[in-house]
Image (cartoon, rainbow, N blue to C red; front, side):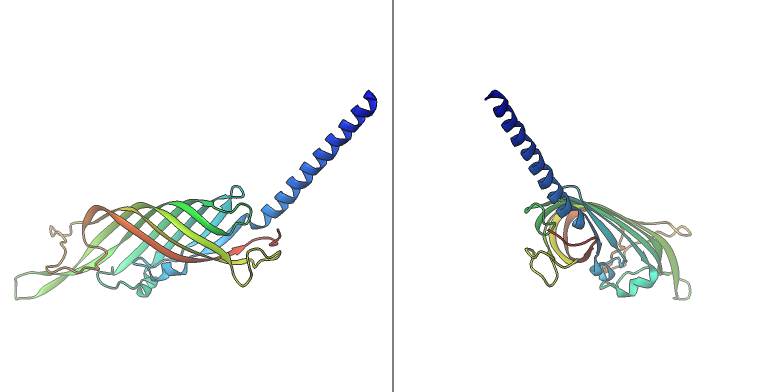
Length: 237
């Protein structure tokens, strides 16, 4: 009787081990296909600092992920910006964003999520202004080197869904969209180098949308966006 009981327990143990391994393998297979997403934010082309900004989202577990974006904005993209006032004659801009995400539903890599984001941006260029010489009544153009640096962060909420098919489909689309909104803080420092003993000041009357007016301040920040993404590998469950 003892031998039979031992054999029975051993058989049950083997069956349990096999079941656990099978579940783990199935979970791993379900997890792998959507572990890496290639993303792009088209709205950065029309931002105050127009940029091309691709990104990657990598899933650490069934609910958590990290996302990194890197953007570059040459002068040729500046004409796409919605804010034309105060633009630079020459410009190079860089931006880096990174965030940690927590998805409410495990295992799907889609649905609602919360995210904590940090970002850094730097812009360098030349800005021409007219300086009155008081000699002959003429204004002379002077080009000031402008340096802009922005550091900040947001607490975001959003939703990521597949295009064209329901999230519970056995074969969802590899293309996804990501819609988000967030609130946070940003510190902005804009300064101009002195040229020929002349200090660049914001023009009298000012330009409200001059994104290069000299400043060194902390202010609230709002972020809104839509991204498109492509999932590598087969979309299996």
